[in-house]
Image 1 (tube, helix red, strand yellow):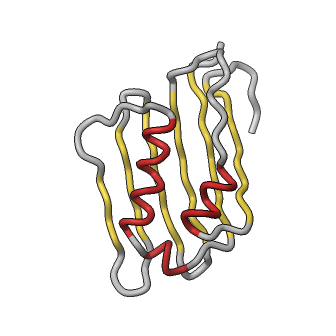
Image 2 (cartoon, rainbow, N blue to C red):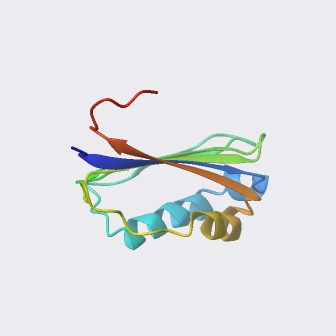
Length: 123
């Protein structure tokens, strides 16, 4: 039995200025919220690190959570979306590569999709 799906997204080659910009990163996550019709519980939490630092954001969802961490010094953004909405059905496709390229200038996007709650899975 699968109780949810987790996406681990690593976007490489991103523009450092985009990774430092809270509005840009927030808009990217808002797009995920809308596209997957996620239900946010309360207010999202955001932190902009000082100077040349990046951004961290977290949404608590009725379906679980959505988080982002950016690393301008490395040109990397990492996103974690855990959602229990679809269970054993396939989740809608999402254009991860094109979306991260447009929003952050990513040149490579690695997406790992993990079924959660499946017995016998090994790391």
